[in-house]
Length: 388
Image 1 (cartoon, rainbow, N blue to C red):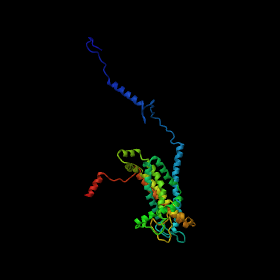
Image 2: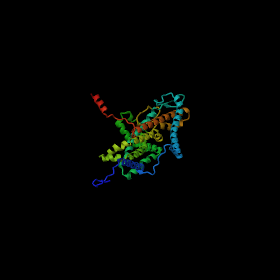
Image 3: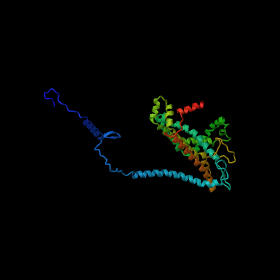
Image 4: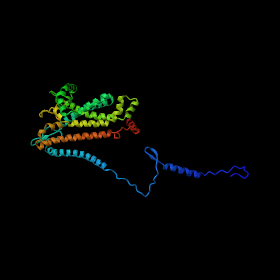
């Protein structure tokens, strides 16, 4: 309102900042209540429903019939495998213990195998040696070749060539064991004679590579090479799948930093596929340890009166070939128990190999426990103290 004489300015309304603050607070609250934060962002919500404090939240039934059935089948399948393994172990123990109790020789360290008679004597030293040595040689030959084939098919070969090569390697797994045995003794063993002569000439001073007199056809070395060919598709197929799953960001990151293809494989592909290669190798080792027919056909059985020869260029018997070759002697509980005891040892060895593979895979997997070097300042100080 102006002054009576009209000289004073008109009155201005006094601002009320308290009212403005209340209006702003009400406006912000209305906006927040109208928006809901979801996975795709902030979305407007419908009419907000204020939860009633006294009302309990009622959930629907947890799990449906299909979920319960599937869970039960999965648990039953896992338990069935464990029961089968347990029953096999119990069966072997039940039949082997009476024969081991009557054994008059050292079961672990004796090479005598005479399970019949009033005083049975049998030991597994020679069987264990031949089984382990042939499997190790097969692994030494097969694993590097399998890794090379897997890398070639995955990263080096053109697409039109990679697929036929992969199928050809996979077809090796479909060849029956008896075919491998016949092919190994009739065709492949004569081819290996120059190799045996060469190794004998270079390393013959080592008893392991000393060639005995004879034709050197059905020897441990020949059986080992054939075993390597038999386990090659197993190791190659699994390694190929693991190498192909290496994240593309790892590979392209290595190439972007200036690495060559080999350096990319060494730094990105091989570390990523290490656990898979170990698993594949252990599966191949399991087959090599238990292979029967091919080894039975290839290996020549040494005479029982001849002295034991540790050379890989001599004959021998594995656990599986021994049991299969003497199946006709299962005419008494004593003899059967002796062979069952040998099978029990093979079962335990295979179980230990698979357990060791499982531990290695767990340690090699991402996030696994690995022993790491101490590169901290404390470690450096300790080294300096040791030097001082």
